[in-house]
Image (cartoon, rainbow, N blue to C red):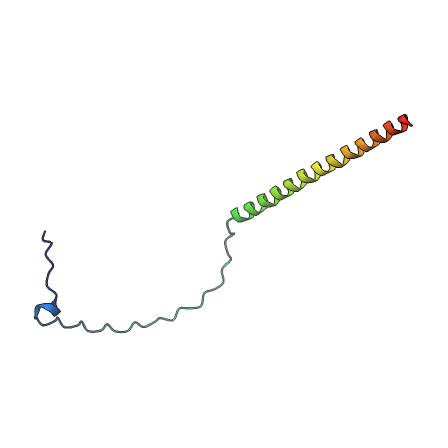
Length: 90
C-alpha cells in the first residue's frame, strides 16, 4: 500500500477527463389518491404515564390534606384541654 498522493489531473498537466452527460430528468408519476383507512389504535403508554402522574398528584394532595386535618384537630384538642384546665383553676 502506498501512502504517496496521486497527482491530480489539474496539477499534473494531463488533460482533464470529460464530464459525464447529464442524466435525463426524472418524471414524477402521479399517485392515485389514498383512500382513508381506519387508524390502528395508538400505543397506550402515554395514557398510562399521564394516569400515573395524575394518581401521584392526587396521592400527594390527599396526604397533604390529611396531615393538615390532623394538625387542626390536634390544635382543637389542645385548646379544649387548655380551656378545661382554665375552668378548673377558676
